[in-house]
Image 1 (cartoon, one colour):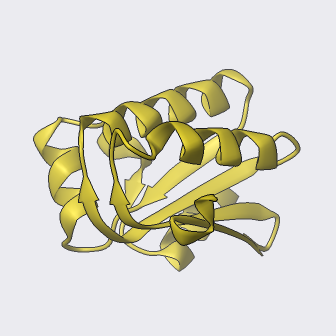
Image 2 (cartoon, one colour; image 1 turned 180 degrees about the vertical axis):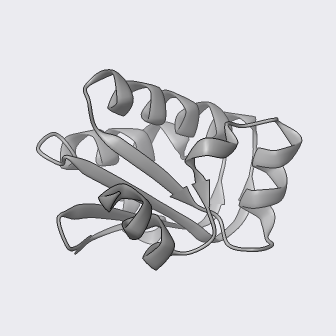
Length: 114
């Protein structure tokens, strides 16, 4: 029952995964399974975190694992974190890879095209 935290769409040839609400130990495993089952065929993946209100260490581990796994399979990925917000703050505090963070979907899509 991940519909309350995750939704899927397309933007050009990229799969867009939008996460919302609190992403933590209670739901990160379920969210991860839903994402992995959906992105098997995607070549490019955008994960929109702009409406995440809370992100704990389990959520950060989930994102790190997703980005690493996608890259190991040759799939380019961007995490859309906005200018401010819980996800951006948490990822920056954890020294998450800056090269995969971006501020908005349009910029992320453009980065993946270049």
